[in-house]
Length: 111
Length: 114
Image 1 (cartoon, chains in turn green, brown):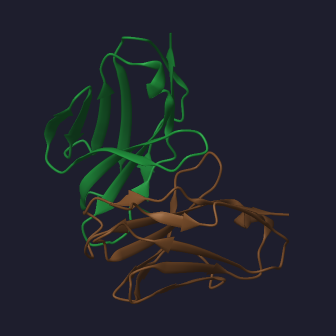
Image 2 (cartoon, helix red, strand yellow):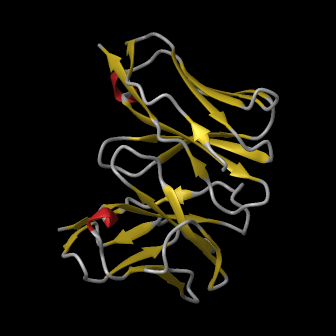
Image 3 (cartoon, one colour):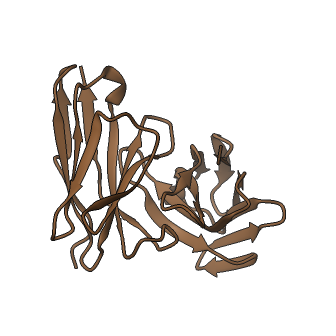
């Protein structure tokens, strides 16, 4: 059973601090990984995707991938109240067409 | 550039009824995937359509069926609705067969079964 695990939270972070969201996956064949943000009542919105080991930065967001540890993370610097949402991690197995999703981590940024 | 559009946005059905949800992919995309997202859960893959054929199917019963049209738009049909079918149904479009391509979601269709 291919799985993606996330801590459901909520994760509470003060405004301006760094929020760190984590995700582990079970399928070593997974090649790419995605972070989506989902506001309540809305559809998921792609934040970042990462294919290679290491860090990938885009503005305030940094995705980190460690394939040896089967671990993906998302760092949000200078957290803003508007970052409060549920963050979904998804993996894309190489031999498959579907995305495998975690249940999401609820992030709360406190002013 | 139109994104992924879904209709209807909200609907209420009675147990046993049938429902059809519609999706138009993002311009230039040829692959449509459908997901079911129950409250508090991540999306669950229902199936994917490419070149008007069901490319892959997730762990959903035959009550869930779909179709893709020549213009790449797609429909999701659910027969004999159960209370447990209440969820947000998401359509995602992408270019090409691989799930490794970036996919874009529509705003979803909220289905409530009573």
